[in-house]
Amino acid sequence: MTDKKVMRPQLWAPRSVEDTMAVYAEWAETYDQDVLARGYHTPDRIAAALKDHMKADTQILDFGCGTGIGAKALQRQGLTNLHGTDISAEMLEKAEACGIYDKIWLSQPGELSFGRGAYPVIVAAGVISLGAAPADLLGQLIAKLDTGNLLALSFNDPTLADNRYADALGTEVAKGRAEVVFREHGPHLDDVDMGSDIIILRRR
Image (cartoon, rainbow, N blue to C red; front, side):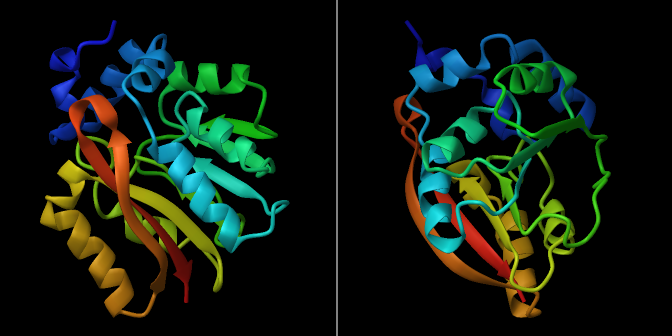
């Protein structure tokens, strides 16, 4: 049985890229079963929201795809034209084994190895968040979109409480680079009583 008292607290605390990679390398083998046992809703909430804003056959980049748990949620909504990338080789091995992605590759921290407009939809579930990727990744991903393209992401409660992430989003909207087309708060992880905002941005 999963005990919420042993939930990894370092997930929601600032740390180096190297430490982040070490956390997920260690966790890859049991990640899916651990988070699903805790009542993990965010991937399914992103997929359900996203399907109403795009055509089903549109190509999606699952950025920070981890083990592929988000791809499975997208697939359940009929969104199956998927590529994936992650900085964790251990997590990516699990993602590749799930057989959902048409293309998958290991990326390097701080490098976005695809051109602007290469993907009309980018999903970053739980990626731009406290303890994972820094707030400035939001602007970098938006810069990779052509006008009208979409970025779907999530901010969990600890991330919402960190002004750096709210400020990064506010800056992109205030400067006219993106508009919010969907935002909703709801459940993230049941057994730690944590919620998350699902956010869909359109590049302007």
